[in-house]
Length: 546
Image (spheres, rainbow, N blue to C red):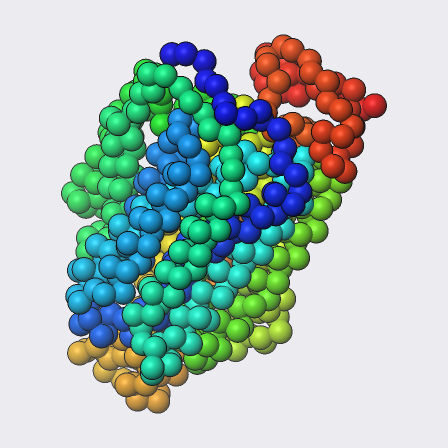
């Protein structure tokens, strides 16, 4: 294969051009994340209008997560082979088509299919935005921009449920606008990126796409996620279905590893995944994803079912978490850019995340909202200091030509962890709620046969005594979910502590192995100057401050 050539030198963009391009990328990231969160409070009405079942209710969410997770590494590898801007635009078009199809769905089955197609675009956008930013901004400077990324994530995570509640509560809009609302925003982002985003194009001869590896990865992950979605509901944890699906997933992923080790252009380059920083960042992202997505997704349910608030009120009550993510992302990003150090902030954020989830682990249906808000704020601070910085730590260790695969690998495992967390913790919550409702109904002398109230979330249709029992069951059981999240997040602390202390480089690309290159004081506006940057055989940077 011939050496790659680029249409432009790998040099940092000016601040003005960076901000212009970043505006479109952030808009894309916002609408991609919003598509997953906006339906959370609207799903009961959506599924009710389409006469869907409880299984279909779950799959409206799972279908998007599944396809987004499975395709993330594929998009990342494509970004290392083809024009990144074109790939982002293709992902936007896929997302737009899926959104429109979901909005016009006439049955729950059609909605699930549309959401699965939409997830392909979401997976691309989530991976490619990180790749594009890495191609524009050196790691040392990227810290200050992570605040914007954290703010967008916080706004989409917390604002989505609030917006979904408002849409379904507005008679002249209706639930279909939960899917249509992202269309004009995505179209605007498509136009904005066309005129503002200009990235060097990597041109290579004899490019080979590892279709077999991509297929095996997607199939292995899909089977695993399907098992997680149905286990403990449609079949038991210990059953022939579990053995077949888990065994099949392990076999498919083992074959994928075998193929990737021999492929000329692997979708997930194993030499990158085996690198210490990448491996630890993947482990940390897996833990953070399981803890954050798996825990935070139940906050809206806690406020609505456990505490009796409306969807709109529940969205407002989660604002402290958004504030924590936004503030910590901005502050940590500025400090990382100023010092060039990243490990202390990841370690501190991981510890804070565990503390926040441990506090949420003590809540019940009568806990003070002030205490709940404080705990949510602390969780937000932990998320803001870890999630994007784990990606940044990996991007700092790889060459620009591998930035797509490396970034997508971290995003892939974070998304996988989140999906596993939602499914597993959801199953634990459902079991504890069911047991608690059955026990309390029996203690109150209320018959439990014929669905005595524990099988429905439509609390308005329940008698007052049963309604109070159901509320208390959900409110009290949710705390247990957050304790499990705290235990999972401890793995993130271990991974953060084992990260190698490094100083973020001020160049877009790694110098050639074993070669020193001069870095001028004016290479990046405002960045500290170094006499030289050298890279040893393991790819580690050694810097001598001027």
